[in-house]
Image (spheres, rainbow, N blue to C red):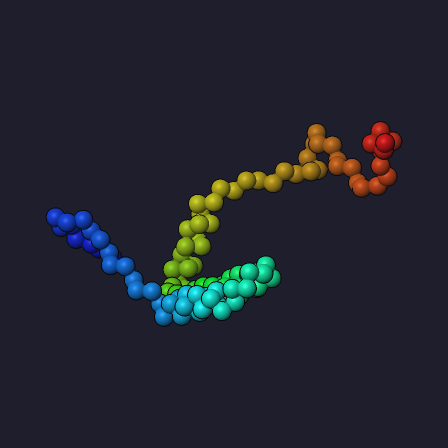
Length: 116
């Protein structure tokens, strides 16, 4: 989105709260009023319920946002993978059988110096 420069400061309008978030907020307030017995277990149960509700709302928002994202053409994906492959530096693997290299020990009995 391109914003044009004006004499006033550029301010984007804030989005209105979603009805789901408003409903959860009202539900949380009512639950606090109805279940205010002062016991720790009720408070923990209420916190767990609020966390689960917020997590569910977040998951729904993520799903809606993912469905609204524009699809990328397969040719662009292939081009991006090819370009990344060309930019990646190739580091040759070390040859364990090269001359001058000692062979790694095979797992077996522990050395007497390592046993305490």
